[in-house]
Length: 203
Image (cartoon, rainbow, N blue to C red; front, side, top):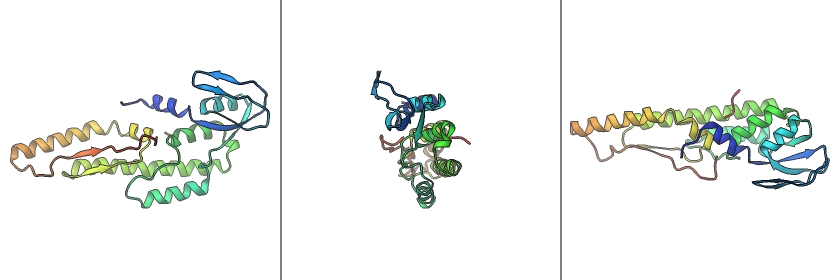
C-alpha cells in the first residue's frame, strides 16, 4: 500500500531514542505503551516524537543513535559508492531520524554539521542509483532493476517516476508484439524485493 511522506514520517516518529531528562515524572501511559518513569539525569527510552517535544521545551538532552557517528557514516558512504546494489541502512528511517534530531538537537550531537553533510551525500548517491535503475528498466528490455534494502522514504520517492516508466514499458512491449519482434525476454519489470524491516532529509 502506497503511503504519503507524512505517513512515513509518522511511522518514523515512533522509533525509540534515548534521552536524559532534566525533570522527574511518573510513568506516562500511551496507547502505544508506557514510557518512563522519568528521573533527572538518568537515561530513558522514549518515542522520537516525545524526545523532540521535550527537547524543544528544553526538558532533556537527546543521546544520538549509535549509527549517527561521522566515521561510521563515512564508511557507509564509501560502501554505497562502490556497491552496485543498495547497502542496508543502519536504521529503517535514517533520513527522517536525522532530519528531526539534527533539526532540534544539533547541540547534543557531536560533529552535527559533518553528519548532516554525510547523510545528505548518502541520500544523493542512493537517489542516483534509483534513477539509474528506472532508466535501465525503461531502456533495457529483458532486464529488471534490483532495489533491495530501500527504505520506506526512498521507495516513496520513486512513486512519481513509476507511472511514466511503466507507460514506456507498456508501449515498448506493445510495439514489439505487433511488430512481430517480441523476444523471449521482452517481459520487463521492476523487482521491488525490499526487506520489510528496512525503512527525507533535505538540506
